[in-house]
Figure 1 (cartoon, rainbow, N blue to C red):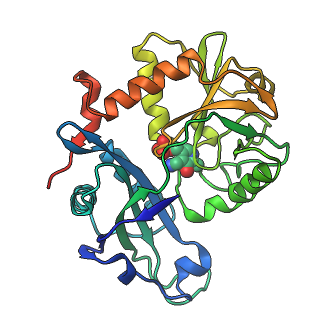
Figure 2: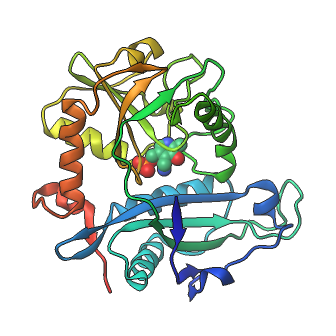
Length: 302
Ligand code: PMP
């Protein structure tokens, strides 16, 4: 769980989060016309630093464009807004959430205007990071919407309803997370995280056709290639995933979470490749590495 810090940035001004409200009958509330993106900032010896913020903003702007929300702020302004809210929060580490929504006051299917309201807020973790491995479940009938129905690269609030219900089923079955299948019945992704497996020493993740292009996914693939670990971006059959030597989830808040059980079948976790990649990513995010990948961090401008 994460709580929202004050102030937040709303349409160009800093406001208290309780002032950032929306009518119950607004289009975003009634129809889910809201896109968002979540980035992170990390404590480093030189103060808080944003991780790949520009890429989060670029993905955010692509999501907005895809659903027809028109944002009047450019990429630079939205990156600067993130710096401003992080600096104002005084927090050493946490998340940054960009959202754009239709505040049109009529809940007809198509809003009268495409103009979006845009908010940028810091979210702080309430709980310490989870250290125990995740238990995940798959279900034959818990699948990602096919790409023809909904492009998986769009981070729209409305896209999470099906995955949310599937997650509830996994929790009711005693697991921590669900892994959704694609149309062919292969592994796709968790509701808010990409999936990786290690099979015969090769790092395997599903291709982008059915999954969100996760920024952590991309970081992990770069780190693996850098470390000489063979990588495969190909459809991952469910049975191969179930019997993988190692498996983990990636997402901005996690950022890399070892999987200790799949469909009730336990495995030692974290495995060696999972641990190696998690350590390298945490060192980069902590500002401890001075190599080329240090460019992923941008020190927060006060
Ligand atoms: N898949 C989905 C559907 C997600 O919502 C997220 C979270 N943004 C991810 C994967 C992981 O993406 P990232 O590493 O960019 O946080």
